[in-house]
Length: 266
Image 1 (cartoon, helix red, strand yellow):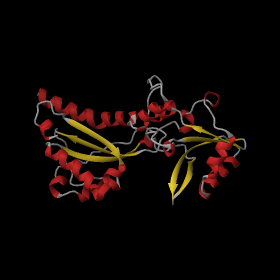
Image 2: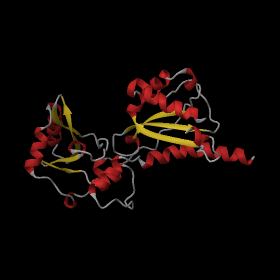
Image 3: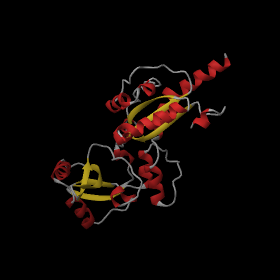
Image 4: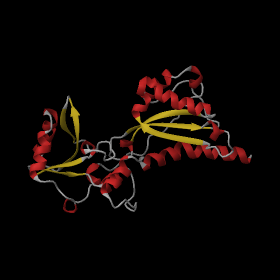
């Protein structure tokens, strides 16, 4: 990164996206190492904690670090999420001195929930009743209560389900809040997300499709997915949420770089 900054074509701005655990992994040393590398290359930087649920119906909390060589307002400390403030407080003073408190306005309110992004029932492959029963049996008491409450409404209710290890046992955890769980790459059985539908006293289940995963990342219907389902799911699970990137670009990156171009032309 130092060599890159020394070149005429060094990026004027860099955006790094990672899981929110980067803020405190290894006691904050990983976040500090990223900031130190950026500082060593001449950048100033700041970070945001962003949940993709503000843009798409998917719970996906991320650490976003924005670094720049351009002039930007400095702030002594971040004003955003607690994870950002704590990560900043752990930085050594020389790295804190290079901090920028990026301000990202709230995006327009999201107007679609999970159910609106799903394929029609007759265009997907449903699992057998026995497989669905086995999935339900993996639920703990809290999640069974949520399912029972959904059935009691008599209305169509949609949830997503992940299988996780809890206390050495595999458990199925469902959410009926209109959001999908955080998409993952399909590296194992527990990484595949299920769709659970409770309707008219019946419970059905199936796997989330690659196209649905693409929609949950904010990709348009015209986006060409790999023919292989696992490849499509990997692409979505390892990607960045497109509307979030567009918002960052419009509110922070484009004004920043436009100001730099205007200064250069003056």
